[in-house]
Structures are given as structure tokens and as C-alpha cells.
Amino acid sequence: MSTAAQVLAVVIAAMLIMVWVMESFLYRQPRLYPLFRTEPADYDAVRLWTVNLGFYNLTTAVALLAGVVLVQTDHVPQGEALIIFTAAQHVFLAVVLVFTERRLWLNTLLEGVPAAILLVLALN
Image (cartoon, rainbow, N blue to C red; front, top):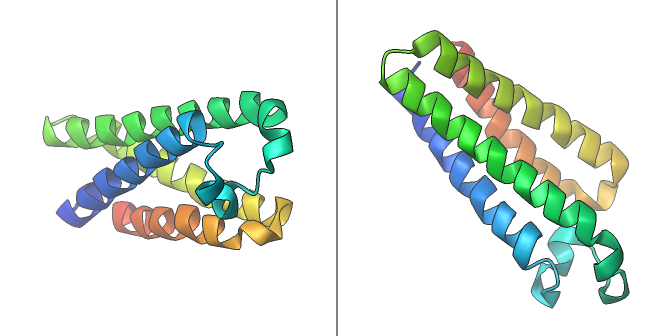
């Protein structure tokens, strides 16, 4: 796996860790409304989903980092499998997101474009 793919995997993992913090702990912040589109009256109702999704993003970041570690420690097929699966998963989820809520098109780009680039890099 190329160095560029590994670096991008680490960058995406860092992004997912930031999203984990925002979704799991800061989702009530008014500044994040454009990102999550959650109204203050709905905070308690959506807590279960936002916190769960946040931790989902954390585990996905860990999978990417584990994939890079595996590639670096001569477990290349296993590491590549983790990285490729995770990239493909996020491309798919970005498509689902834009069809579910078109107003979250920026989130779709932030999730899908880096993952698509990673997928292309990892498969070449």
C-alpha cells in the first residue's frame, strides 16, 4: 500500500476522531447546528443516535489506524483489508446520507470524497 494511502487513512482517522468528539460530547453546541441540523428542542430526543453514531465514528477511526499499523508491521493483506473496507463503507454511507437528507450535502462531501480518494489509492 502506498505511503499516500496510509497518510490519507491517518488523516481520515483524525477527522473521524474530531467528529466523534463533536457528535458524542458537543452536539448541543449551537455552532454545530449547520453540521448536524439538530434543533435545541430535539437534543434529548436525538442523544441516543448522535452519541451512538459518534462512537461508531471512533471505532471506524481505530480500524483505519489499525490498518495502517498492520501494513507497517508486515501484515499487509490484513491492513489493506481494513483500510479498503472502511473507505468503501464511508463512500457508501456518504451516498446514503445525501439521499436521506440533501441539506447535509457538505457532510456528504466531507465523508465521501476523502474516502473515495483513499479507496482509489488503496486499490492501485
